[in-house]
Image 1 (spheres, rainbow, N blue to C red):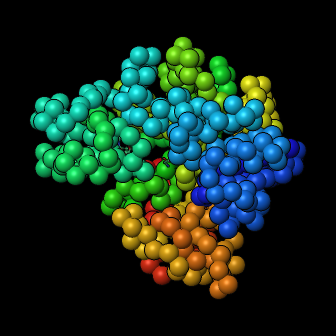
Image 2 (image 1 turned 90 degrees about the horizontal axis):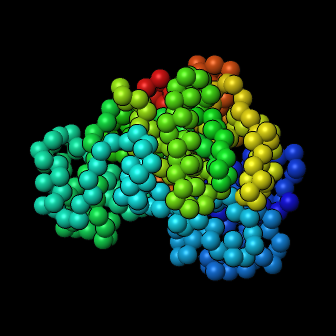
Length: 414
Ligand code: AMP
Ligand code: GLY
């Protein structure tokens, strides 16, 4: 079996290594990949998105796995192109990926299908936004399009809201687009992952990510500074509520709306005093949650994804270990406002945990930083305490100039 994994980060390396460990022993290819991913998967030697599809056809690729979201909505969509070329794709069509690409589309979908979520109003301009907020703070403002995790502002005061509205409507920092004014919700957050195949689904191991840069949930939002994963993160009762009120109605809604879906679907939830509510959908695995979840996966992920992409759902092919997994991210100097490349990474040989590379490059001198999030250091254990102690101890052995790491991953909010 030949599988191409599309993407270049730590999530994609975790997927590639888990696919590589599948008993069916697939041959792996990667686009655009990274030096680290290319240790396990062969590079697809093409620069453009157009050539990627013809290369996969010419090389008889059996399955395309979408890692990052951008390709799902790029031009006419990765899955749409794969479908036309006859290549099974694990990842949804461009139309279905609007659940992630447009907050307004997602909100309309949630409301139409009676799925619990915060109340929201879509607005097109500055004054309209202020009118929709109506002096109620805190409020949550969400730019409608893809904004690399930077399009959401939780605003405690009118001054915060005005500053963000200025960025969106005057400076047009994210380009043209509308905005959702959303009700402020409270409660712990949890990331639930579904594997969806038409009208079937499997709920995978839940996780929690840590979005703020610094300890104590302080500092700016990032792509994620760490994650903890375990089946024990959610009680069976809570998971049943999430399945009945959120996951199953979402899958029925996709069917009812004629939105084809075969792939991972990420439900970002807030466990409010009124029950779990959806704060966002992502049409792919989370990053860094994927780096924490994949080491817990047992079975044959490659066959699971291939059969799912062909419409032959086979949930019996995978399961999850009952223990815990903790992922600590090392980020480069300046992240998230900027990033720093070329800093030499030390201590990788001493590190006794799994290491996934989010943004690195291999040079003659060794691995160097090459992006904002640099490395994901992941450790497992039968207990939460064992997993988090190991993850933090092993992460502390790795270093580079200006490295940033949270020391409360899997402690805070547990
Ligand atoms: P999103 O990109 O929609 O996941 O939002 C990013 C982060 O903003 C979430 O992880 C939450 O911490 C926060 N957030 C989003 N929506 C709300 C909401 N309605 N109420 C409170 N916080 C929110
Ligand atoms: N960890 C959040 C995300 O993948 O969007």
